Length: 518
Length: 83
Image 1 (spheres, rainbow over the protein chains, first blue to last red):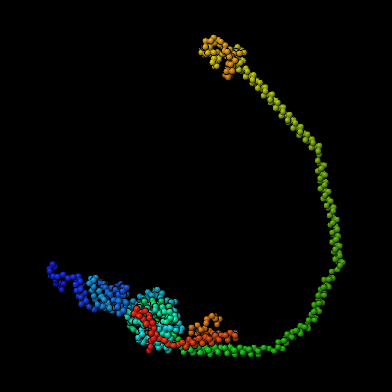
Image 2 (image 1 turned 90 degrees about the vertical axis):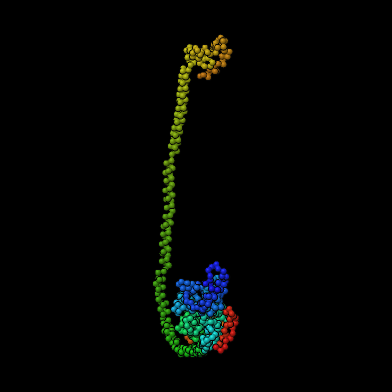
């Protein structure tokens, strides 16, 4: 089985199977390393659907695969996060299936408190950045909750302290959701409990609490670490039920304290914040009844007193009327004389005014007006006559100026002028026609003298051959028939037809043809 | 008392009844309400006081723990004694 000292290759030493080698490697690793503690930085973390957790541990040079089985996760102590400096404990193991070795981590702690605090600061910054610490998100606590939900461990002093203090102040219904308050299971269980209480319905068999208290006693930073986990803080921030956090001692501050609606320094203090003191309230209520009675009776007494006071202050009826009576008397005395004086004053004024008012005056005024009317009406007739007369005079002048004889003479004159103009026009017309006739006759005479007919009278004759004028003997010899025109008539002679000078049987026909030449 | 006339005294929480009672007391003690109204106020105050007392009497302790199944789901309640 010694792999290293095997003989040179090719010898007949029996071969190993792959599984045999893998098994040997696994045995070697597990025997040599066994249980180890390894310090390193957590690389990426994967929690598989099966519940197993796979992660890497690394330093500046190497990476080691790690895995924690589902059943081991709760015992791990903390949940590894990328970037966390941790010390992991567990067994080294090798897998022949994949030719890989790995650490089966079963316990894990954060390497040093400084590293933990740095991690906490990082988370605080993250959640503060998301606004989860805002004062405006804090809900007021109910004055007197009917049901209080407490999320803590059933073991230990914490739940006892809370119940004792509640009992002292105001016994209530308390529902306890038991959770692990340290270790890896703490954070998921607490978060689940917060969500679980919020899911209860009001008045159900498991009544929904009006107030939640998340509590844990004091411990080391590592012990309290579950309350620094992000899931716990987010669940507390999301809670619709007002929540008091009471984790550790007064000096311990965990992440949940920043998101809770109220932070109590201790579990006992949480119970004090949760409920008022019953007997104090009872005393107040008793007092209230007494105050109410006192207030009512003192109200009555006060009214009674006030009534008496007012009644005392009320003056006697006689004293009320004395002064007005006196005034009435005084005024009454003055009334008669005042009336007389008033009447007198008015009668004087009337006399003044009526003095001017007499029938004579009125009649005088009427007579005056009538006189003026007469004058004006007398002027009215003549004025109208004058106007008519002046207009008829103007008409007479115009009629006188009108002369019919002159008009007739004018018509006569214009008539004569017209006749003269017509005679002149007729005369001119005749003269023009005579002149034109004479001119025509003269021109006709000229035409007669210029025509060839006149030369015929002077002994000349015109010879034509075949219809054309013959001027040469040569042309005459060629022509068939010669026609000679004399002053009185035409005659035909000779011709090429050898018919000697037989006159044309139809001399009358020629002149029509010849006529066309001229 | 004119602010919330519709609110039934018997449905008030202790805190509401107490606040209302405080208000009634204030009005009565100031003495600036009419006589008729002060009597109405007194009657209302008495009812409120009764409600407060009733709520104070409901001071019985009952402690139970939630039972969870293996998955961590709540299944019921179990009384808790001796804590």
